[in-house]
Length: 330
Image (cartoon, rainbow, N blue to C red; front, top):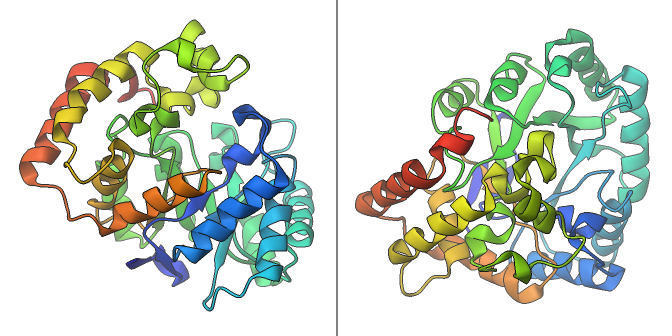
């Protein structure tokens, strides 16, 4: 698998990484064994970038990654990015960040974190220089090697990269959520900021995983968003579940996208390849606890770039079905 440089960190990361959000309760029950096997499968497939957070399974995802890396010898450097949860008030205090970093180091079993990201705090946090001064101190003290942010909106991303300590931004980007490919991509490239794409498959919509709300289990955050509307989903104003796209609009868009999927690719691979066709993207982090899906996702990096006509068709579908719902909201 090809590698790309994660901005000014200098990390050479694989185009496809592994996200571990689905270790948490929002995706149902996932055993330690299943989660660990997903990580091992990714490493065996060549992945060298793992993304996690202290809140995923209340620290369980970090612990499992730490245990796997302690037991495995992947033969190359594996980079682990984690996220520090905001304080109860939605911001980030120096004390809260230090506590988060200490906890993540302990669970991962490392002396310093490769990359710690602010985990989608309230927008006001991005306008507080003290937050980023705290990250600078943690870096100077050797607690973290690099710092970044995970954001909900393009505006937050643009503000965050004004701070020199921010070397990466994690955000949502896929055929159903295209706004980042405008001013933000240009500014990130100009400032040498690495870009990490999450929710690439729009919570399964772009994996063509279901056709009706009845296909979603009770208690699944996706079912709530499908039945009650976008705001019932996960994230600020429901912007994470289905990438913030209304369920029916998303199904209609996927139906129209099917004609553009190459015969030798799945819908999920098509979506991942579309993302990777944007040179500004450093890595994309689909999450799965199913080994077959992990291997399928990794194989997307080997597909040839999509044609200009196909990319135009994807844009047409976006504008017809979802633009009005997501483009100016996030």
